[in-house]
Image 1 (cartoon, rainbow, N blue to C red):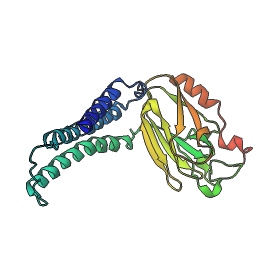
Image 2 (cartoon, rainbow, N blue to C red; image 1 turned 180 degrees about the vertical axis):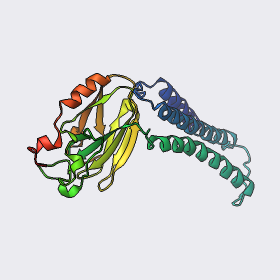
Image 3 (cartoon, helix red, strand yellow; image 1 turned 30 degrees about the vertical axis):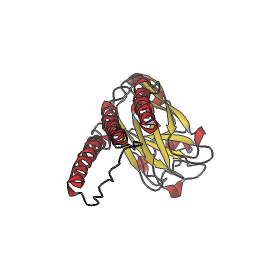
Amino acid sequence: MALSIALIVIVVGSVLFHLLSPWWTQPLASNWQRMDDTLTITLLITGAFFVVIHAVVIYAILRWRHRAGRGQARAAYTPDDHRLERWLIGITTVGIVALLAPGLVVYADYVRPPADALKVEVVGQQWRWRYRFAGEDGLLGRSDIRHVSADNPFGLDPADARGHGDVLIDDNELHLPLARPVQLQLRSNDVLHDFFVPPFRARMNIVPGSVTTFWFTPTQTGRFELMCAQLCGIGHHLMRGVVVVEDEAAFQAWLAAQPRYAAATGGKP
C-alpha cells in the first residue's frame, strides 16, 4: 500500500510541477512556432505514457498485493504471450511515429531556407563568436581552416576575389534585420560548439570540419542572448553573445560601418 501511495504522489506531483512550473520557454521571437508545437506534442505523448504506465503499476500493486491470512494463488508463468507482445509492439510503434514524424517534418523545413534569405557565416572558436556577411557581390568568399591565423581568424582564402568585399564582424554582437529570413552557415575553428538563441527556438551544432546551416525569421526587435549549448572547454560559460534585431534601415547603417576584408588587411588581402 505504501508503494502505491508513493507512486500516486510522484505522478500527481510531476503533472502539477509541469503545469505550474515557472520555467516555461521564453516568449517566441521568430517564425518557429512549430518548434513549440513539436515540443508540446512530445510532452503530451510522453506524459500520457508516464501516467498510464504508472496507473497500471499502481492497479497491479493494489489488485494483487499480498494479504495476510488469505490463501494466495501462485501467479501464472506465461513467458510467450504473443497477444500481449502484438499489443505492445503496435502501441509502441504508434507512439514512436507520433513522436518522430512532426519533428522530421519541421526539421526538413528548418534546414531548407527561402531563396531570398540573408546569408550569415558564424564562426565558433574557444571562447567567442565571429560573423561574416557577403559584400556588394552577394557572395561569400572561400574559407579554409588552413588559412586561419591571428591575422586571419576567419580563414579567408586571400586568392579568392569574391571574399575581398566580405564584411567581417570580429565581435560577439550580431545585428539582424527584422522580418527578413536569415540563413546561418556555421563552422568551427577548433572543437564542437552549438549556436543557440532561446527566444528564436533556433540552435544547431557546429561540427569541426563541416558547415551546418539553419534559418529563421526574427519577428521582434530587441536584444537576445545567444550562447554555446555544447560543452566546449574550460571557458564554455564565457561563450556568450547578443543578437540585436532592428529595422532594415538601422541594420543597413550598422552593416555599412563594419570593416571589409580588403580594408582590414590594408588593401592587400
